[in-house]
Image (cartoon, rainbow, N blue to C red; front, side):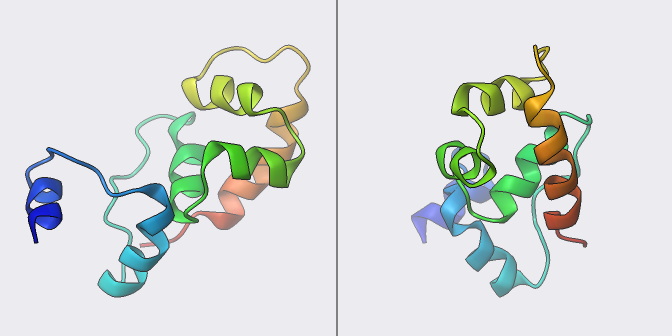
Length: 95
């Protein structure tokens, strides 16, 4: 119960690996909508319950490139943008 209280008071956030269970229990995604385009892939990855490491491995890109993309930093070769753009839009849950 303490975990829920901390989450409601914004003292803590649930682990990303638990988000699919939380979404299934609530029947909707409780995370706020992305305020910027760079936040969309982060929210999609989190809704799937994937860490940066696992998501990067599944998409065949270095973890550091995924981290740069999620922070909105420039990419050098465009490798990540092509692979995650479609995945984040397709995987993003609808509310």
